Image (cartoon, rainbow, N blue to C red; front, side, top):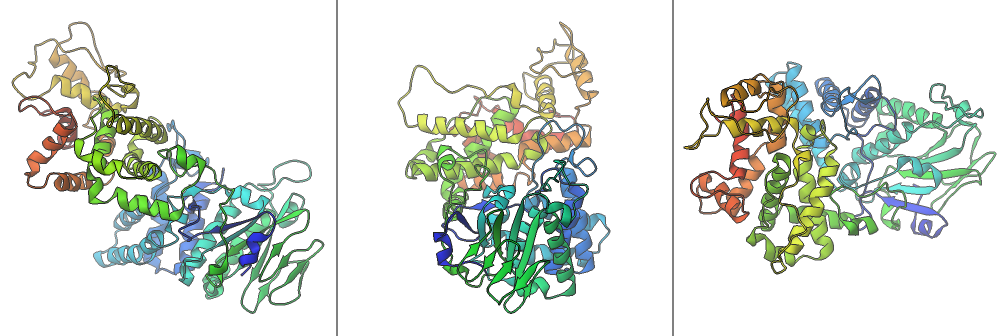
Length: 578
């Protein structure tokens, strides 16, 4: 272990404590391939990390490998050109762990596993991976401020895990960071040409060097499989321009040109790197990074806000997050508050507002029950809770939105609108408003544009249009849809049913349903409506919520919120409105 309290008093030393709740919450997502790195190679390497650390049985390991490939495919990654699949018009997104978990179970079913084998896969996910992502170090794997992994090679950094007592978890976290280091762009050769395609340790020595000093957990070399896999990975890290030193309790693993002096001190020539209980130092032309893969002694390590962050943790974060990164305690508190019953109206309102963006409907008003509890929170806590709720609402729909635009743009705009609406809700009425009545058509994806036009000519009720009536003008110009002045309803319906965006197509139905309800379906919204509408029947709850947000309609007619939430049920027949 390289690190102690005196380490933080040295010059230019950054301490990243993975599990410290009072330090800046940083993330090195294992599901994110390195810049330009082939996604298939990254997927195989990550599967190897799971197998080396946890040693799952072969059926579980096969489901993991297949699930990883399905996950990247569902997010639009193309394994061959290391980039987006053809037709993707937005930047690629890093998969979420919950998506990986779902795809692993889908892979187990697709592989023809029996019920008992699928139960074994589910048990591994719940007992090992769910616990890891939800544990003290879960923020390091997902949901924190992203770390610029490349910048770790240009300064002295200690990465430790003070709250991780499990040896397998500590080994996995160290492996994640090593995987990301191994996938960084290779150093350039003396001729100035990138050496990715001819990256040998000797070629790497011609570029800038850095050193990884690793305090190895026992499990790292506890089995031949783990030792072999980590040995190959450390070899790749060396090929990226690194010297790697692994320090164990009694054994020091050294490479070429290394002299072993003792269990705590190593001298590396021709320059000097000292690894002791108190300090990490490097020569003038080298940088040093220590990776603590064991929890021993980590409670003595001081804390510094790392200067290696790429930016805010989410596009939904506010200005305060940009000025100072949130620590783990703040993020955990915001997550608990965001899912508390006291914030049920915030969740319902944000869901309705996102749907208003996605369907071109009027923005819902701030419901009165939301205001009292909201004002009791501090400004920073309000920003963090709001960002958590918005991020969840948009991320659940990101798979459907990403083919049309970057969901992060929607998050950012929704954050600004919601913050202004919440601020304006406490002010006296004005003759003018800085907020739009509608969000604009740019946020409505093609499948929902089709549903909108189908509903306009196929609405139920006493005012329903007849087949020989003149169809209303199109709100959305759908490419390839026949249209002319005076077109009849029957001709409009015929054109819509034959259109490529028709809900008769299963991919269109899937994208439309995800955009309206999210990947997890209506369960969360239904639970929130039940909490907010205690004493009301299930049929009355949605209408009650819509009325409080101004999203209802006069009389017995359904309001726009009820209408758009009914689309997924109607999509199953391919004939919305019937």
